Image (cartoon, rainbow over all chains, first blue to last red; front, side, top):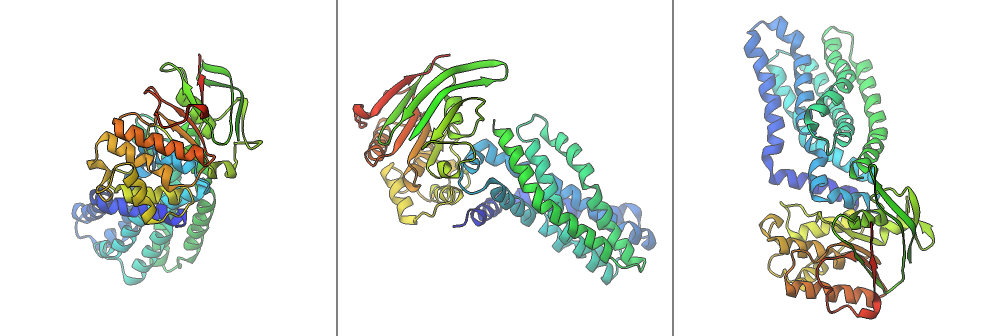
Length: 221
Length: 206
């Protein structure tokens, strides 16, 4: 079996045997997105205005919740050592772990987002754009977050440090992601925002696995 | 062939050992002795390529081991962490272990490896329900499911009962007879099965 596919399959099947870890971040997203309309009240214009931003911030925090566990399990039980010593390249194995993280904590958010967007009275076109931005944006969040997770691996108080490290780096994704939906509702079209998000995703897909691999090697020393 | 020359190891400001050198030829086994804390694990991690080497050379068939894919293909390292997932069965763990190492393994081969280490009937139980010794046996089964000529084993028989230690001894003996190499540490008496002619001891001093 190809090492890349083997690692993706292993991470997904491990997560499916411990469903609470996956469900935590998905429910967090649902609850955060549901609390805002309840708190603000049925003011349609306000809700339409804040909807994309709230959903994006929710997705961003939800995907960050599971970042700390991304490499910690493999580090604790020694699997990471075996990955470093594998004849397969470490960046590709790390890429597999990032893909698995996205499948488990990014993709469910993309699928749920249209339902949650209804609470903010977004129209069909805005919902389509929102889904497109999340489809491009959530893998970007996993890729950026993975670098932070690798850098803070084995550090005491890693969770707080991780959020301080990663949240500022999430800002461009948030600005263009939420901005795309607002541009669409304002009639400007979202293609520019989506192109920039796609460009950031490509950049991150190339550089993040290598940065993670170097950080993981340092963490094992 | 593995050769280590004038190797030293520093952890922080502290020097663990220096001037370590040995050679390991096909069909031989090096038994690394030393007191607790003298740096046996650090030495094994350096030789396997997990710890960077600042002073000294480690080479495999004449080439340095750093960024050496050929060396990593020929190596199995088993440290104190067993690299077994608690939620997966021994069978699944060993198949994934081989896949991560870039090798394909036949399910029958995994079953026979587990059987020869005394885990018959427990192949499909999650690792978390096994005892310490059984976990160690399952982890050692990767020596039989993967193809590699150099085995680096950090206290392989710790937590194992006497029959399991003997089984490990037989596995090591068969590997040496096929021209393999073993570098290991242990505080237990050596397994009887290994012919004494193929063992060299090396005492590590701080």
